[in-house]
Amino acid sequence: MTRIKKKILITGGAGFVGTNLINLFLNKTKFDILSLDNYSSGTKKNHIKNKRVKYINGHTRNIMNLVKNPKQIHSVFHFGEFARIYQSFLKMKECVDSNFVGSNAVFNFCLNNNIKLIYSATSASLGNKGRDENLSPYAFSKAKNLEILENLKKYFNFKYEIIYFYNVYGPRQISKGSMATVIGIFEDQYLKKKPLSVVNPGTQTRRFTHIKDTVEVCYSAWKKGLNRHYIITNKKSYSIKEVAKMFKSKITYLPKRSGERYSSALVNKNLSNKIYTFFGKTNLKSYINDFIKQHS
Image (cartoon, one colour):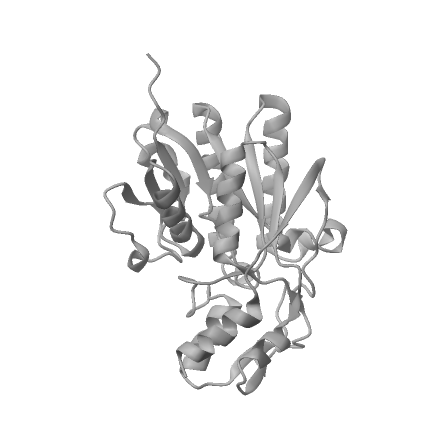
């Protein structure tokens, strides 16, 4: 008798995207959830109190030892990687350990146990006709992981979905410290009545995408199981300076940073794969206006 696979494993489940994805799965499915997180950027404050959710404290490189019963795992959402551009220069060892060593362990875990993988890719490696993959250790690591997965698909018929994230923002985003998001930083500075810090020149553009739109595409891709590449982004891009001005606060400028890209690229193909693009419904201006009203 075949045992029913009844658990979803989410790496980075105590982080920003992972926590929102857990909430979505609790509401839409009957699966139990396992979170594997080393709390480098995630926090126990994000833990969801529900008997269907279990949190495992550990690094993805040790996934084979930490997840005791892989036969019960239906799918793995691998969102627990090092995920910052500039910071990947300052914490290169941590980036490599997470995005190469840890991710390789996750890929092997899924491959050896016939588990479906949903992997978070990044827009940081798509720009400038693919040449932006060399802008930072982070972008490089993410691009090379896609090449590894492509080979696993070719030679071992490995099944996976790829979701390209574009500057995600919203509830539970990181607002303090070196791993904070742009919108999270601006919100924190606004609440503290401080000038909003913009990295020079401020004209670099991003397609900010709300977390609700992001995790819904992740869920939809998982449910359809078509083994495709997806982009979840926003139709409109804004410069960082434009976003700062939406908060109606003073602005201060920071020096240029290594690895900074100047625009978020939309492409329809990566490697040999067609990319299917979805545009989020949440409007950034409306989100910021609502935030200001709530805290005025």
